[in-house]
Image (cartoon, rainbow, N blue to C red; front, side, top):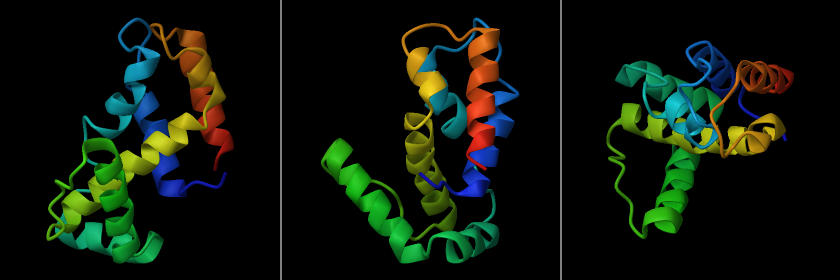
Amino acid sequence: MKHNKDLVIHAIDGMNNITESNTYGCDLHSALFNTDYFIIGYYDAEQWLINNVGIFQAIETIRDYENDMFGEVNTDFSSSEKVVNMYSYIIGEEILNDCKALQRAYDRLLTKRDIKSITKELESML
């Protein structure tokens, strides 16, 4: 599956902060896409959405995801920053779901070998 290059790079960059014995495989998505913003700044967020996915497509993706997962929508769609960061959270989950190296290490603490394998697999998505 083809993933957005910027989001894959964001994940790869985040892997530089993952160290052995501090992250479980099942917590990697949160560590990469929920502890820091993908984009800061309303203008930059809006421009990224326009150039990469389309504002309305991002809103639809978020609406569907939140309805499926939580039964209601909570994202503030009047904020381009909140939209782009929630969208990156959702697509980040899809990216990591496609990462076989992570699936093998999902239920345990990540080792140096796991981190290297996951990073390498993410790089192959570029």
